[in-house]
Image (tube, rainbow, N blue to C red; front, side, top):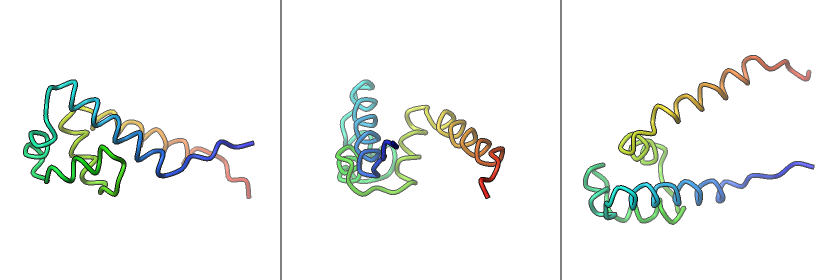
Length: 88
């Protein structure tokens, strides 16, 4: 009935997005890490969908000029929740 979304799947998709964006910009993991003031291992783990912080993904989104889009999506989800009628 419902398609279950798993956290690991979202983390893998975020990692794949970061890797694609990084490659599109011609950056190595080390170069991206340096510009974000994080380790190359942090970028590697992110791209592999391994544990990473919200701060790390938001830094990457800002670096890739996607932070405003992420913010709009969060705001839209928030509005949807606020405007939904309770089932109780």
